Length: 129
Image (cartoon, rainbow, N blue to C red; front, side, top):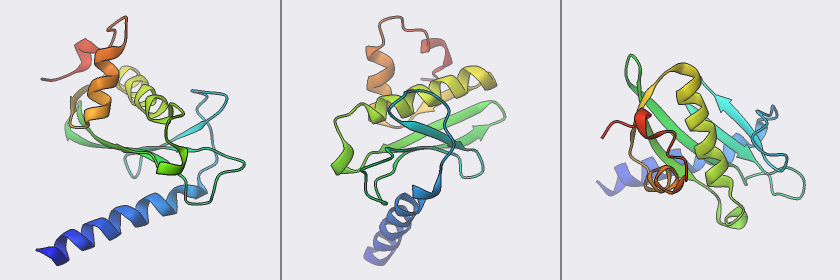
């Protein structure tokens, strides 16, 4: 069992480390570039100049049905936390739901918090309880 957990942690670390290659922007913030990697079902933010090559934040999702996704997790490296990057990733995921007319299960505690704290509550109808 320990081997299985270690293997999963290595796979997750490898994914985060390898995401420094993205360069296109979606325009969610002038400060951060968001990349939607549809093939790997994730959104990434690379803070840009001054950041180390391994400092990439990521939000993972998976399709659970024809028009349903599960927003599974967000990860922001410790060195770049506290700058609103998880919120930028969460907003990108919400925009994706709207654009693709999808409904979402929310497994990630941060995304749940993000949606609950939005003043307009405009995404509540997209969430599957």
